[in-house]
Length: 167
Image 1 (tube, helix red, strand yellow):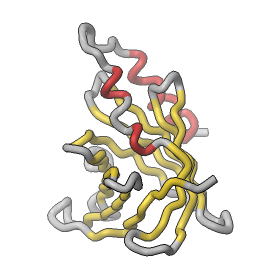
Image 2 (image 1 turned 135 degrees about the vertical axis):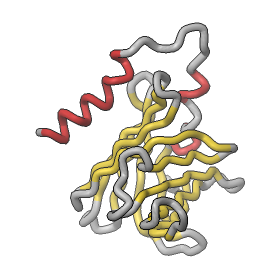
Image 3 (image 1 turned 90 degrees about the vertical axis):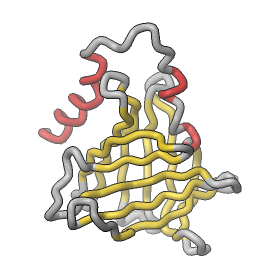
Image 4 (image 1 turned 45 degrees about the vertical axis):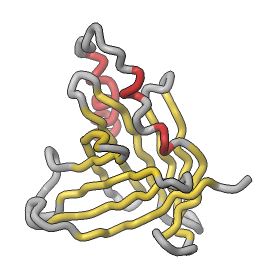
């Protein structure tokens, strides 16, 4: 129940504050749209399928919902992704059936979405950073790295390529 309460608070907290006026926010809410769709997820640079993912637009195109599952269904997770206009950043809240919870924040840097838990992470357990990069072939590369030394060095724990699912 505590997780649900926190989740609902995070989703509604930005709406409780006044939104910036005189600014067209619509383009900011669509910076992550390159990730929308039905995907087969492969280990990057291989044909090894590691998961399936459906990313859909939700809440009048104000957010994205991710549904991820590995083949066989023994691991699954979901994320809510939203641009927070008050904080001027992207936010992702991830939960999975292995007990992992992440709250990542960040922004679009050049053509990549870069989110990390530096504000909320734990250097002992590791700081997380995930980068999504749209590729020229229409796929999206996702690289998840962890730092155990406060961000001085990073170790890649997942390097995946999201390829559009074939009907």
